Image 1 (tube, rainbow, N blue to C red):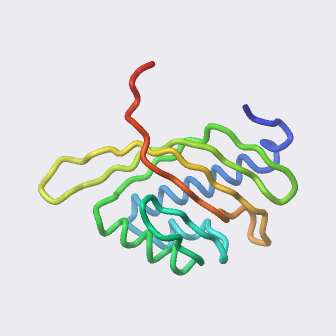
Image 2 (tube, rainbow, N blue to C red; image 1 turned 90 degrees about the vertical axis):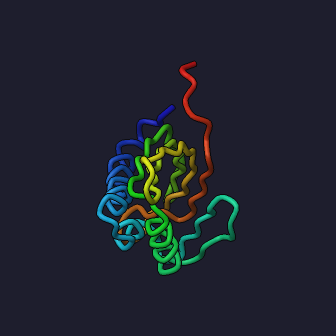
Length: 137
């Protein structure tokens, strides 16, 4: 469910930031992936400690890329919120290339809290975890 007034103002800029996030993985450049995060952002990786601050987040994504994740495709399911904050719920697919093996796709689900900054909409809090593969239901 999308709220029309919110979509008009924030959906396109958030989609652009998500596109750049994915582009960073394709190019293997963690600075591109981290560019859409606020300076004081926090990410909540699965089974790991919180990662605080844009520089630490960039280092985290660099490690993820070095581990073999080469693609991250995000799909927004819903955006809601008001004022200077938006909440995005979505799904995604991470493509992992292991040494000598065929690429493997990992399904994820995520929630992002976005905040409006002087630079535009930026990811403030980001949490995700694995999701079962689509069952066709």
